[in-house]
Length: 415
Image (cartoon, rainbow, N blue to C red):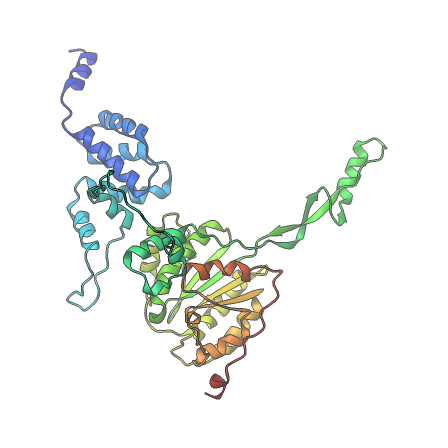
């Protein structure tokens, strides 16, 4: 038999349900967020026909070569491939990750696998369509006293949200941006107008003009956004807020070029590289695995001392702005905290303290940690919902005058 006849007979063989499975696998990837369209389905089927299904490694690499266009998409593709093509171990892990966590024999909480939540959601069967009301029945709605759910979520406290509301807010946090106002630098650049004459460019233009009068060349100062350093408290009292704020920090880290994030509880951990990953699920999973003191105690003074000693010089250059996210509840009763906060305030251009306790109208600076930090901050703002996160942009404006130091209440001064 000739090679052409062998190929025609092979193509005439029934394919079974392989093409349908490849089609459904591409749909799962699309539901998980990968940019795969209908054309990718045709290419994937052609690639499978070329390599066959006898070797699983060749089958995987053929699909990856067609469906993956960026390196960041590879972890999600590998997990989806192992789950969809029936890897029993990962399939059990995915099902276990969707169940409530329980304590093991050792008393420790079982850690879920490093699987994106959207992948688990994409593997679920589609919901049954809801029954539509009869079009003949007229329904009158009075929207005079109704409000947009989006507007309500922007002002609702993170700690009082349900699971569905938290899922909606996470999507809103992913789209938030924190524009840092640009500031002038010492370096200059060529410009059409400016306050300084570019003598070298002017002489070069006169030489090329062969003695004729040449226009003056000007230079202007370069403008660039300052670095942003975030120090986020992940202690037990800040657990619910810290988990939501990590979505916000992931968004601003991928939006800016000089954003550094460090978390602290009883020790200081730099998570900037983890948050730089484009996939928010993978980034937060890496943060969780790298932090050992999550939802534990608080040693604000010791952690700020470590930051001032190890990270201050390399991160707080060029008029950096520092966001301190903490409730100020220190387990060491503010021992040595005032000295470290004063040193931090002198090392940066602006120190902004975001405290979720400010959501209460009757807030008073009674704890020792709050009284130690408060005299050295430039702005003291609440952080408990999306609306409060949007207000941070106003505090970053360099044209805004520094906030007057908030005086201590009389009751706190006497305590």
